[in-house]
Structures are given as C-alpha cells and as structure tokens.
Image (cartoon, rainbow, N blue to C red):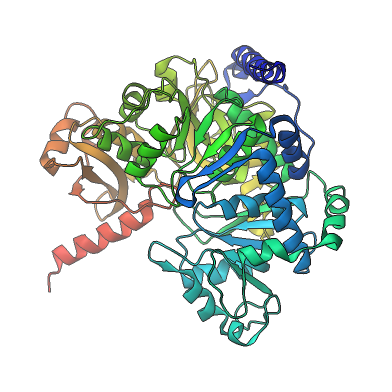
Length: 588
C-alpha cells in the first residue's frame, strides 16, 4: 500500500472510530427521544466539481467505473476527461447555469457522465424514473421546466423514443437544439443515448463532440462561480402515494451525506462497490456514485436494471467487496443462492436500505452472502437521503433490529400528534434537522411548508429510539391500521410472517371495514418451488400476535407492486384488494 493510500485509509478509519465513540456518548437527552449527531469530521464546503477533481487528483489511475454490459472500464482520469467532453457539449447547446436537464435512462455510463457534466457547469440534473409512462414524463419535464432531455432509446417495455416523439411531434421538423413543442414548452434539446440518429435530436456521442475551445475556456470560469448551497439535483418523490414532488437538493446536501454513508462501511480506494440499485434514486446516485468517489473506490454496475443472476455473476467475476440493495433485491439473490452457488468470498460489507429490512433476511445476508459487515441505513430523498445508519461492528441484534444511530451533524426528534417530543422507548413521528434537509419541493411552497417546519423535516415515519440512541422504524404514519380503536403497525406482523420457511416476501396493509373501520390484509409470495396456503400463515400467527392483528384476508400472489427502488406500493395493494373483494361479493 502506498503512503498516500495508507493516509487515506487511516483517515477514514479514524473518522469512523471517532464517530462511533462520540455517538455512544451522545445518548438521548433527559430520557427524551432527541439525539444530535457528532460534529466531526467537518462538513465539506465544496461543490461537486471541486469534490470530483479532488478524487481525480488523489486516485487518477484507480478504476472508477465498470459497466460489463457496455464493456466499459474507466480510470478516474479517463472518466474526468469524458465528463469534460459532455460538459463542453452542454455549453455548446446554449444551456446556462441553473437550467434543468432531465436524464431518462437505466444504469449506463452516460448517466454517470451526465451527472458530473451537468454539475460541472451548474446545470440542475433532473432524475426521471425510467418506469414513467407518457403522462408522468410530461408532468415531470413540465413541472421543473427541463430545457434539455438526455434519454435512452428504450428500457424493458418502455419505448422512450416513441414517447418523446408523441409528446413533441415538432421534433420531426426542427433542427437539433431548436425544439419548440406545444406540450413541452420549456424543452429545447433532446439527446438520445446510442448510435442511432433521430430527426431533431442529437446522439450522446454527438453531444460529447459538440464543444470546442470556446467552451473549454468557459469550464473553469463557470466552476469557479458555483456555490455549494445552489440547487444541483431534483428528484421526484412520491414513493408509494400522491403526485410526484420535485425534492431539490444542493451540492452541500448530497456531497456530505455521501461521505458519511461510506465512512460507516469503511469504504476505501481498494473496494469494489456493486451498484444494482437505480441511478435515478438517491441510493444509486448519492450513496453509490458520490459515496464511492469520496473514497476513490471502484463502482461496478452489474446491468441496466436489477437482475439477481446477473448481479451475482458480476459480483463474483469482478471480485466486488461491497454491494447496495433494497431488501427485495437481497431476497431474490438469496433465493438463487439456494439452487446455484456463487463465489462471494470477496464480499464483506454493503448497505441494505430503501425499505424496512426483515430480521430474518438480514441474518441470511450476513451468513449466506458473506456480508458480515453489512449495515442498515434509513432516510428519505428529502434528507439527501440518510439520517441513521449502523456501524459494521455493531452487535448483530442492533444491526438486525434497528437502523443504527444518527449521522454526524444532524438532529432527530420523535414527536407525538401534538408535536411534543416523546420519552425514549415511545413511538412517534420521526423528524430530522440539519445540513441534509432539502432546499424544498421545486416551485411548491405549500407542500414544502407542510413538510419542513422550523427546519425540521417531518418524515411521516413512525420510529422508536432506545436509551443508546439506536432507532427502530416501526411503520408509516399513513400505513398504520386502526381496527376498532386498536392501532396496528404492519411492520410487526410482517416481521412474524417473513419467518415462515415458505415465505419469500410479505406485505401487510389495511382496507375499509364496516364493523371495525379497518381490517388487516396480507399479501405473501412463496419461495420458488414451494406451495403456500393462507391457513399456514394464520396458524403461524396464532399465539404470536394479538387476535385482532391476525389478517382477515390473506392472498398468495406471484408479485407485489413495487416502485423501481423496491418500495412496496401498499396503496395499490389496498385498491386491488378492495376491488377483488367487491368482485367476490358481487359476481357477474
């Protein structure tokens, strides 16, 4: 190991060690559910271009990115040069600091290049969910006034070229960069990823060749004018309910969160981090890309989208030492490992986040995937995203049953319905304050004011703090089921049902009931090759939970409706269940 390598590795380990010690000292105050993170290491004051240039200067010859599907492997120095090519092209299009640029693509090299190139010249990157359909795409582009759109040609069942042409048929009669669309009034330029040519649009390759000496001379000038507090990223968030809102994040928000996330797993320049989670989400873009860059680690993208077999193959082939994923991804990989072994001996750590992690799944990941140091992280897009995270050497019970302790430079309180901080051990709504809280929802002051009160982000999550400051997420305020005056939290029932040896995944939710107001429902997926019956699940719950918590309705299904990031969409399950019961009651 070089002197430089040792210095950076030691610095990281030192920072993590100091965080852990200080966090243990900073227990909830006065037995109330309030904790404050430590104040070191200091918060970075840099912009993303400054942050990236630091990584290039320290780790120039390290492999930065690997995209096996695209047969791409670039060092940090090579990545830097490719980013500047795209940045010059964006300037040549006439885009100016503060303009919004949409990115509609699965996990590809072009996504990474766009991420850093837009930041290089102060453009606001707008992450668009690759699963969006026509009206959602139109809403997103118009909501934030995207001036340019960089898009893949297709992904899975989505034909992006067809969608964009339907929304902007004027492309057929305009020159590239001179679009005037009735339905997309702000959009001026469309850039398609790939070698195919489309009238009225540029290819990504053309974009990267568009800039010249004039644009090159402007790069340093523009980067010097950027401010850490300026908006640099918009992510649409509605998660499982409601219309999309544009959570607006700054350089300051996401750089610092990325640093602290990877401090907790002791990531270094010698690690290879597998990132099968989508780049359009904070998990991939912030915790994954920016987190890896903060340590000079290698980013490995197994595929355009998540595929369990492909991910396991790439982890083994590329000797990945860490992997990120949501619980459903780990469940899929564990199911495959039961019938097809893979060499995962290089794996040691990673992060499981995005949705509550069942205890049994966490234990299996520890043992069957060789991830003894996997951590749990909790947060939301509006907080950049992570607020709580476990350490790699926390006791297994704490890493299974909680989401860890508070991140540096943040405050968290848990409140009751009257806004008062509850005692330790009492559940209430979790609120976060600090550097990570978003600037607001783009052009939506009313929604911002509802969510951020006196600097506190109201998460809508129900949580409990223990006497050591460990946090447990017990559900969503909106997911709580009230049956005959009894409060029921789906997470408790899900934790029981996931332990059934035949269950691969399960979700619990409420539906309207004439007698009790609401009643409990469960949807479960059987493990491959298993036959699962509702009676088996009811039998398992007997004597384990109160009778009123046992689901009245249980369905065995082949799949659960999920967001692309793996969050269960309980409102869809609820609506479908209501429709199914109506049909059963009133057959045609």
